[in-house]
Image (cartoon, rainbow, N blue to C red; front, side, top):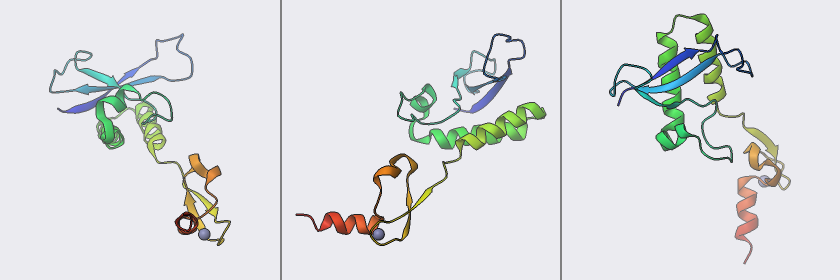
Length: 138
Ligand SMILES: [Zn+2]
């Protein structure tokens, strides 16, 4: 299967709120070259579930979602001449970048460690102290 991005402008969509002027669709060129017959799914702004229902893209591409999304965007960026579309693609690529890792100081040894932002509030100990703490429990 050869996946590509199909970018459609939404200039005529007057009632389309939120400032989104482009629709990025994933198409399969092995199916046919004619859009929308080769439509697979939309490329979402963010990959993964974020705690909600996984989107169609994630269901189609599974563990490879992020990899596939990046490749589609990078390929599209190279092929694109329109500066508006390029800006949109670059914005999408930025959204796919992993969130900045949050550094926390361990309450036990004071060492800085990398905490996942989502779980940050629970992570008071660095991995080593965490291990020691719970290994000592019987
Ligand atoms: Zn520690």
